[in-house]
Image (cartoon, rainbow, N blue to C red; front, side):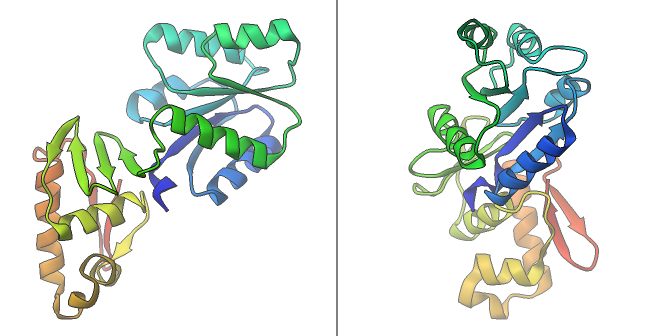
Length: 228
């Protein structure tokens, strides 16, 4: 459940392979954004904060390792796993020197891919044993029930923590007020009206994004809210 907030970028020029990778990663609970070339990827990275990138070496326009080397020089430290048929020792070294963190040679088994992704996310501190949810400037420590925003601790009530946990576990998915009542309030939710839900969400919004710079919460007319 906690992986819902973890976004992975996949750059693969073979559409059928890209769709297959997207299918298996989404099945594991990751959010996936796919590209058929490196075009537009850098613009995407300026707006989003993915946790990991899968990059094919043989890409049109700019070769995968060249693109990753460019990202590293630009300052991006996103973990990268190369996907490629280039399996010679010199080619493997080339990929690592360019800034790759791991390598999977084609053809590969989907299970191997998901296990390597999980291992790299753990090494990068994104997946930890205590389970943390990370999204944009938010890090929610599930075991310690703590929140930090831009590295600064922010105190939440139990209700606010439950609400944020629910929203961060369902990025970009509309949640009804009934779902919020059932999951965040639990048994006490039966006596909570829609206005009380709105007030609680607004209070949480002001705590995690006082200036509304991130625009986390989006009302969905007739339904509830979407966290983005």
